[in-house]
Length: 118
Image (cartoon, rainbow, N blue to C red; front, side, top):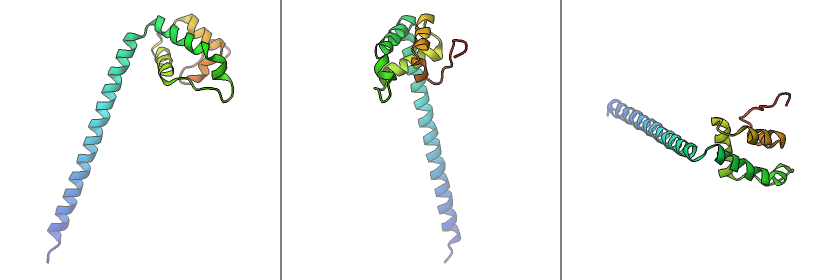
């Protein structure tokens, strides 16, 4: 019995299945990235300097509990808003300086210090 055509068929089928899986994963990644970008644009439109100042004020109110060892974690929504404000540079100067002075900026490591010698 000839197994050559059967093996070739199985190899081609497996290759096509794996290629289909990779294409489906790529499309899903693209869909998620598009949705995330749209959500980010929407959130940026909702936030302004005032919204960022409010987020910093909320974080400053929790300062002592957040900074102590084993303290509470920053709520995810608040952290994402502040991160977005820092990344897009829509935070006012006084709010940013308040975060620098209270060392709350270190909770957001992607951003570097704006104050000299710190």
